[in-house]
Image 1 (cartoon, rainbow, N blue to C red):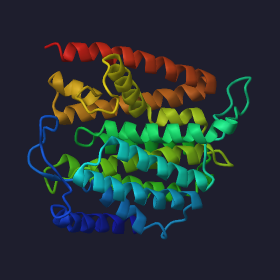
Image 2: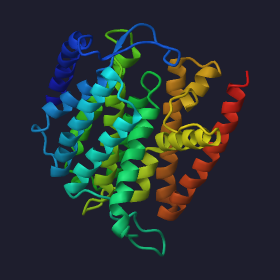
Image 3: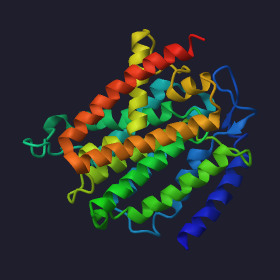
Length: 337
């Protein structure tokens, strides 16, 4: 019943925010880099956030989940301000850094990266805070970077959450995942956003606030489930839950560095831009990337259950290198036309 109510509340929040978005300057206007038609409200992330926050007391949720959500309000508010007046990359990074420190201060941190054959439970020690900040900010921006075509960022976020839920079932550790039902509610809100994002009926965008929130939230969910006292998923599987976003941001940063361009400066050389440049439609591009993401996640999970953690880690690194090389060549082909 709560799931049904969440659908109703999502639609109510949508139309309320859509009415006020022009007054708040939360409108995305097309330009040389943005190819959409007309001004679109940048309220998707705010809607998802408000809708899941409203039901936090209707489910059994962990204290860490509450901390993550409340801290995310800072990211949502300052992200919306950035969407409205364009405060820039430095402002976004400082905001993300502050939010990371708040959650870390609550006691949630990456303390170990798992066991690998003859290396049981590798502890990070004094580097845990630095490593946690690096991973969270990196993943937050990977989702922000890839938010360039309808349904893509939100679709990848949905695949990541579902991957966590599936692994917890396979591992039979879902009984320790207090937030299991709540993650299903969040998945429903993301699915609702995708519907309004990919259709022309009351079309909305995530905005930087939304894409950062999804990346930030998923990063902490992966940390929560892999660093839990009753480990929900093995740490090596966390990177396989976000394979495509990690692959894309790594590829983009390397290619921009090779071209001596600021890694945070926007361009049209992400995987979705390249596919569009090659003649694929926006919808086809989204579907292709989401299918690739599902396949990659499945490969990682399969390798883990067949061969164990160490081959799973080596396979991820190997595929990442192959992806970077492939995208460098594909980018040259696409933009040489």
